[in-house]
Amino acid sequence: MDNITFLGKQLKNPLVLASGILGNNAKILERVHKAGCGLVTLKSIGPAPRDGHRNPTVIDLGGGMINAVGLPTPGYDHMDAEWQALADRDFPVNASIYGGSVAEFVKVAQFVSDQGPDFIEINISCPNSDHHGMLFGVDEKAAFAVTNAVKKVISVPLIAKLTPAAPDIGKIAKVCEDAGADAICAINTAGPGMVIDIEARTPVLAFKKGGLSGPMIKPVAVRCVYDIYRAVSIPIIGLGGVTTGEDAVEMFMAGATLVGMGSAVRYRGIHVFDLVYRELTDWLAAHHFTRDDIIGAAHNPIAGPDSTAKKSRKTP
Amino acid sequence: MIVDQKPVMLTVAEKTVHTAVYTTLFFDFAIDFRPGQFVMVWLPGIDEKPYSLSYHSPTRFGITIEAKGLFSRRAADLSPGDFVGIRGPFGNGFDIISSPHTAVVAGGCGMAPLAPLVERLHPDLFFVHGARTREFILFPDRFAANRHITTDDGSLGHKGMVTDLLAAEIRRRADQGAPPFDRVYACGPEVMMHAVFTLCDAHGIPCQVSLERYMRCGFGVCGACVCSDQVVCKDGPVFDSKQLKKMPDFNRTALLKSGHAVPLSEYVSWRCL
Ligand SMILES: Cc1cc2nc3c(=O)[nH]c(=O)nc-3n(C[C@H](O)[C@H](O)[C@H](O)COP(=O)(O)OP(=O)(O)OC[C@H]3O[C@@H](n4cnc5c(N)ncnc54)[C@H](O)[C@@H]3O)c2cc1C
Ligand SMILES: Cc1cc2nc3c(=O)[nH]c(=O)nc-3n(C[C@H](O)[C@H](O)[C@H](O)COP(=O)(O)O)c2cc1C
Ligand code: FES
Image 1 (cartoon, each protein chain N blue to C red):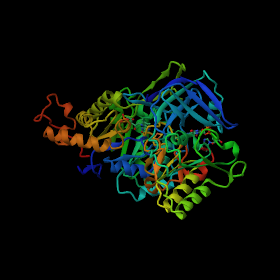
Image 2 (tube, rainbow over the protein chains, first blue to last red; image 1 turned 90 degrees about the horizontal axis):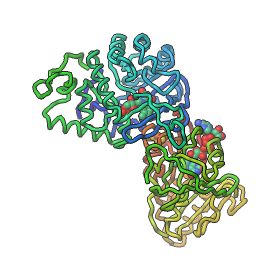
Image 3 (spheres, rainbow over the protein chains, first blue to last red; image 1 turned 180 degrees about the vertical axis):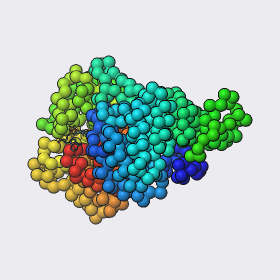
Image 4 (tube, rainbow over the protein chains, first blue to last red; image 1 turned 120 degrees about the vertical axis):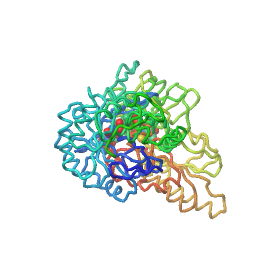
């Protein structure tokens, strides 16, 4: 086990479960943690009960998937049993939240912070709803306002989760850092995209458009993490299309401190965390590197064991 | 074939109306299959929901629908030639042991996933089938196997519950020194499956039951269907006694579409199987 310190908390390794993947109850989060995941994330919690969209909402396309689940949530104040179950946990938890306005984000954040998660992640990047989320992730003023307001009312470290739809994701990340974010998570789903069934002559998803995830978006995610690394000095959770240890290495080299996985659970099962962790450590050992050696390594023009000089950064 | 990615559009090849509530749609399509597995059924513009395969041959499969809500009524109204989107099969299916000392307990349309299982089990099995009234007894003439029928109102067979007959048979075998059941398979309302599980457990008989939860992806990522730490669409829908014991949410809690965890009684008011 690595025993990493991330924003003052101990994690057993640098792997993170993405929000919206299996994060519906404490028991399954515990199982994902046992299956080798260093930090598990709850499915995004919103201000009021919401059913999400009608099905189909999640379709596998082979090299990735498309989803428009539509931010279903019991609502932050209808989760007593879950908070109770999480209170006795022996693993760290990241609580993802969303709102339709700064005021809603603040209301949810304040309440959730009191439930004692290890981190709060603001989902300012969800493409699958008409009124929630994404606006905050593509507009610098809005990103600043929401991050700043949430930071003021919570007592745990704040992670801002960004969308690749931002015209300049580095700028959005910088604005979040300036507003008080302690880390950046990138990326949420790409697109939105659409899949049409040619027999039925209709989009397959009930919401018609949906976010892309899995291997097909990895190059977009790597580029985003690379851009963000150049723009900020807070740590980055690199997420999007990672399914193997080598994918994780690529994310670290782009500048990630931790690496997240979501769709990989579909392609390799819940044990993907154990598998990727082993592949990652094997790769590092074979190359005589530590994880610290490779974080941001791709930003150095000459790659190689002696030239992985790190950019100076705040200790995570 | 496995079509677990985008739905494939299939035309309804044949339709059988069993009773006022049960309809089977047949599709001429080769699909890989283990009894207990399900497919996601898409009616474009309406919704997509899980249905067990109730018939299976190398060239044809069928799903049986209990018309109860918006989606199931529309599905039951389809005619031969109409298009339906299918993804699957998903889930684990039943473990099949072929022994004369097995029992199958079906409640209502819980018969749907059990029917193709029964066709692969030893013909001497002990088979109990119950429902609210005779209208809800599915496939009354499908099997050669001797079936014991129970209805809540006594309109067909024994008046009472399926577990009455199962308990009596377990007792009879013990009293007469006959071999006990090697395994009991069950599908029906969750309270019924819980009663079967408890009864079997008290007699040391392993059982397997098929659970139902609200589903979205069907392949284990979205978390809509979690029951304790088990993912019903992927780890299940079939669970055995050992697993059920470690699932406190079994017969207690289920998630609504919003992800809200509610007591099972609140959840089942709108579910069949
Ligand atoms: C693995 C699996 C296999 C299955 N196999 C079969 C099968 O072989 N045959 C079969 O008939 N069914 C099967 N089902 C059930 C099936 O998927 C549908 O749930 C069922 O047909 C009812 O669908 P419906 O849309 O018609 O009903 P719904 O429209 O869901 O309506 C049922 C009732 O519940 C209410 N309701 C709907 N949504 C909610 C909600 N979120 N909260 C509270 N109340 C609500 C409605 O108002 C209505 O009164 C299976 C389910 C699973 C998980
Ligand atoms: C089914 C599904 C549901 C998701 N729900 C959420 C969510 O509620 N909140 C969120 O911030 N991201 C959500 N995401 C996005 C993921 O957290 C992640 O950012 C994205 O899938 C890219 O990572 P991946 O390629 O490893 O899956 C969801 C993704 C999927 C596939
Ligand atoms: S339906 Fe998505 S995890 Fe089971």
